[in-house]
Amino acid sequence: MLHRQILVLIFSILIFMPFSIKALPPPSPAGGGMLRLDEKHDFVATAEAWFPDEQFEGLTAEAWIYYEEPPIPGAFWSIIGQEGRFNLIIHGNRNTLGAWGYAEGAAGSLTSGGASLPTKKWVHVTAIYDAGAGMGFNGKGGNWCCPGGHLIKSDKPLRIGGIVPQNLNRSHFVGDNMKVQGYIDEVRISNLVRYVGPEWEVPKEKFEVDEHTISLWHFNEAPGSILFKDASDNGYDLWRSGVWAVEAQRKLTTTWGTIKQSSQ
Image (cartoon, rainbow, N blue to C red):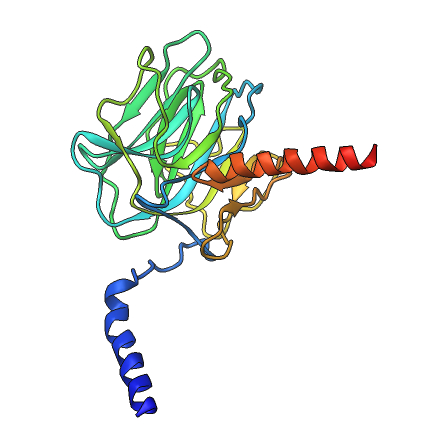
């Protein structure tokens, strides 16, 4: 009797499992793990300001992304961004990439357009800044405007996914921000213009750290992780939803205070 009950339980689990577990997409061309983003797992962010005092003359933010449906018309998704400095988004009106960057002494530049992004497929996307802003995907992109100068400083964390607040007094995307529904892999940010349009070779393997890499995340951590390590020497690790970063910092401060008191 007991054996029969166990068999019935196992059979029931096997029947309902396909309906309760969401199938993962295949690995990206870079291989390894991936970061899931949805309403529950909305973004990851640095615990502190990301390069707050740097004045970048060139910057390239790139990633592999996978999503099943584009944002609705009149809305957009944020892929990579830092409030007040730069952002790479998917625009719902035409399902295309958009990018902005705030240059010193200018209101900022905004670009959006080009061919529609494919869904249910891994796509290599890039945001390219040379004071102005440009973007591209799968080896093709538009020219960025107004080269020269540098991006302004920002004392905000860097976010991947989620919503990046925007200053309404500056150039910004029109429409409602929405949370990304999909997956991101291999995010790399470099302190130069790494790709020159209108066409370039798409990376075929995982990104490696070189002299121009200032942040790199492979997202190979185990499922359920709240911390994602920066593979560069700069140590800008990412924390799930930003909440964990604050809690970890609080615990670290408390622990350090206890150690100091005990040593006195």
